[in-house]
Amino acid sequence: MSAPRLPNLDRLSSAEKDALIISLWKTVQALDDGRAGNRAGGASTDTGSAAERLHSTARPALSRRIEAAVPSQRAGRGADRRQHWTSKVATSRPLQILLAVVGVGFLGDFGIGWYQRQAAAARQQEMLRLEQAALGGMFMELVRAGPVPQGNAYQAELRLQRTQPRGVMYVLQNPPRVFVQTGLSWREVPSHAPDGGSWGMIRLDDGADITVRFEADVEEWSELIPGYMHVQLQFDQLIGLSSEPGDDIVERNNRFFFYLKPRGADDLEIKRRAGFNGTPPAFIPMPPH
Image 1 (cartoon, rainbow, N blue to C red):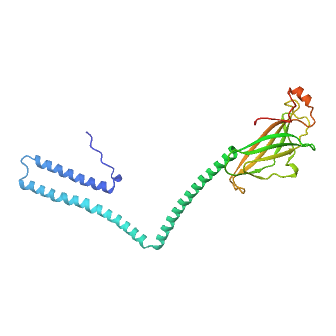
Image 2 (spheres, helix red, strand yellow):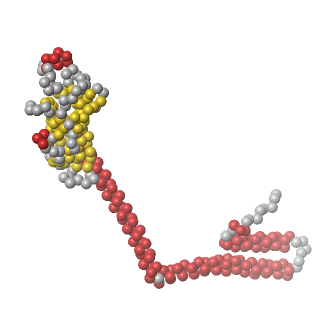
């Protein structure tokens, strides 16, 4: 059996070193007691009694010296430092003020963070409600389109309708754009509000009618349906729940595609070519795409 390895004294704490010394002393004392008991015809009773008296007096003294004197010195130094720091904090007015300022700063930072999180959550809920109202609570459709009786312009009439009965919505209309397909591309044509009007904000309680006038007399327009022009109407809007919105607005993009019969078209020719049973309509709406 190999001898046990000694511990690395550099890595032991003061308490562990104290315990090691006491353990070594007790081991030495036990070995001495064993040797004294096994001696045949050994020393006299007086000698054995003297050894016992030596162990009984020296061991408690060493144990008390190690266990009581050394730890009490370390503990005393730690207690002195704590007492010094406590008394310094208790008597130092600038230090008390500094600690109070730091505490108030932490509380203020926590309060500001909590308020910002609550405000962000409330804003997110408000924007979600606005998006639902703008995209799902409103319906816009193309009602009719055709040439204006006087002049060379065409016009398209649209209906803006609320689908949610409660609340009020405000719709800011951007100027619409009108395109006519020529070949495989779209050509933009002039458009404007009727009678010299302008595009502005609409308070939408229930429904509203919107009219767009445009010029569509272009050459070489595409004839996807015999005798009809292919027209695209873009109508973008900004929607809010207040007449003076800030950042709480939602953009809605409306796209309408339809076939428009040109002014002066020959209905009989269109009927023959397209196979209509009755009079060819002024316009043919298409589903959104």
